Structure formats: structure tokens, C-alpha cells
Length: 144
Image (tube, rainbow, N blue to C red; front, top):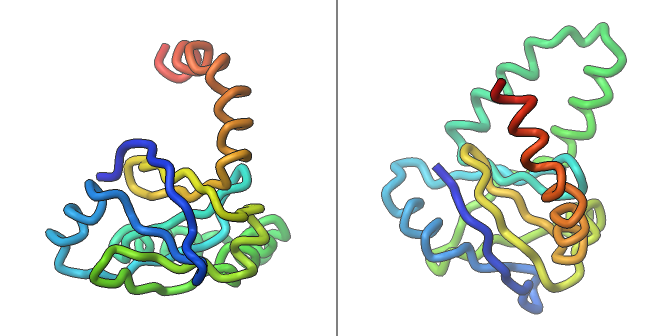
């Protein structure tokens, strides 16, 4: 659904414009609601409502008696915000999400199939440098 890697910059109101390819896809969607929350590996996750609802149901089904489940759900859902993408394709990032992802001004937006990830540019570059060397090894292990 979402694919590619794009460099962008936050404006003075802590907003960024989604890549043109993503904006075109959004125009074709009936439901325009999205959710942004704390992601993994130091990024933010942006989900379309349809995917968010499925993920929410799955996470709610995990036993709250398990400490790890409670901790994950607390951090994940407390960080979540329902957002509307404006007519220009802009998305705002709250201060606490910017702080979580160490976002200053320059960001990288990547499409990862069912979600969009928002990364601080330096954090993404470090992640990419470390993991690109492991890419083929991971493919070998995942697709044997």
C-alpha cells in the first residue's frame, strides 16, 4: 500500500507534507482518518484507520494479565493521536512524539507496506547503515 523513501522538512508549525505518491493514494481512500503513534526502532508509525482498527483489535486481545503486554499497550496507545491530513497533505507532529523520535527538522518518510514511518534523518541514516549490511543475511533467514 505504501512504498518508497522520501526526504522532507518540518515547517515552523511542526508539520510535514506527505510525498505526492502518498497524497494520490489518500485521495482514492474513502476514509481519510489516520493515526500516528510511537513506533519501533526510534521512529513514528502512521496508520490508515482501516489498518489501525485491525491492529487495535489484535493488541486488545492480548492478555492484560501479562506485564509485557500492559507496558507495550500503555506506551503504544497513550502515544496515539487520531489525525486528519489537510488538503495540502500536511501532517502535524506533537511535541511528545517529536521528542520520542528525536525529530528536529529534517525527516525521512518511508512506506512499509501497511504503514508509513517517520524518522529523524540522522536516526534513519544510522539505522540504514547498520542494517543494509544485514539485508541479504536477513533475506536468507526469512525466506529459506
